[in-house]
Image 1 (cartoon, chains in turn green, purple):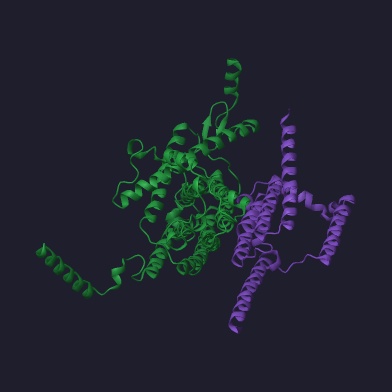
Image 2 (cartoon, chains in turn red, brown):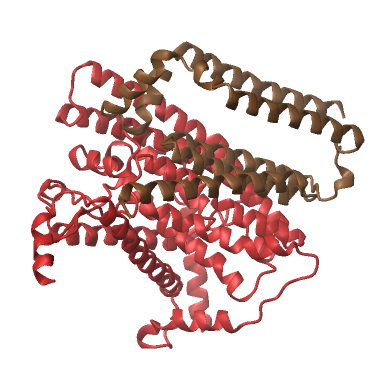
Length: 428
Length: 189
């Protein structure tokens, strides 16, 4: 037995892909492990959100269950399972029960094609790609699956037999269609640079060229805004908008069925963060070095790249939470006009500019990895970013609101406020 | 069991799984009274078709099937159904009734006959140009430039560029036409 095992270990070269049978086995193990870790992360993102919210709003947040409240997630889970499941009258039963699952599955499915570390050589098995399924259509797969996320919300809204829920569902589908186009358009530039839709190839392109966020900042900006809209988070949480629609699409849900919607939302946050990292922040690439992208692959490389990838994901998840507790909600007409009148034209213009530049540089004979090519792209990018933010700003968006008030008026207001402070002090 | 036998077993299972589910969903799609339920069954049909495309190694087509039909067109359908609240069959302009059923029967029989004739006489094989098989074999052997979408994109943007651009202009004209018609109706009121 041991003899045959050692023979097997010698025969299989760990730097080569595994055989068919091994591939199936490794695939199953990867699915199980990634699913487990992903669910754990989703659960703890809810905890992170509540603690960060507490920190931002200068209060404690949940800190009672276990040290620093780390078992709060378990307590919440048990609570949700113990609660009564309500079924309001007049609902479409099949769709009402199915909707939470439909909302949750696409968010998780997208993760199947995202590479999260350099390949891992396993003795006796071969070189295991650190991605559940390295599809040749990887990126298009993520777009296709993320476009399905809206079904859960829409169906939940419709099947609840409640006008607020229906309005929430309608808003969700309109919002999703509007922002998906901008999102798809913004990533065209990334694909132009990579010349491939496989996500591992896109990571390799960024490792050899430069992170796309440096060369295509505007594409990242559009993608980030659209991604935020697709996760239905503040400032784009109009489908649930508690001040207008009670709780929107999930107003009629309770217990674990309700809980599936927040789980789907946090799963979407993690997936959206991972996509941003993969497309614009080099995926698992360690910046400024090349040794991590080249064979021979080792366990050290895998662990280091995975560690950096996780760090990047945590940063983006934190940013999502940060945005939620910073920004107010958009009005519905603002939401539509941002999607159709700002993001989409901006993405179209940007595609034209980037495509022309790449065509020109290729015609000039510059190699994609040369300093000249990267420098020209970077220069164009800086110019475009400055121009766009100058136009977008005009004392409204990037600058604070008081920049629209004249300086003299601000000085007068300050004086008034100081005087009133003095008065109140005297009074005290 | 040999690996090849196992592969063909899995392949056959997947084929029948997707095929039968597609047919069952399509039947459910035309028989459901609730428009939303019908739309969801149609979504299921699209998924099964995408699965069949993947089995034919047409991964790009499969992804596009999900992205365009399921992710965009059906979402718009659902949006319209919900916006107009088409919940009641009596509200719909219904093609059912005696003549509708008779028409459907004839069209169905005609399509079935077509499938059977094509299947019997190897007509499909005769329709395929003789050099296509050689071309396909050569393309399969050559490494793919630009990944899996290269073979689709290259002819589209080189050989058939004019046709491609004209089609997009046609679509644009259709969109503009829709906007004009929509605006005119509201102004007349």
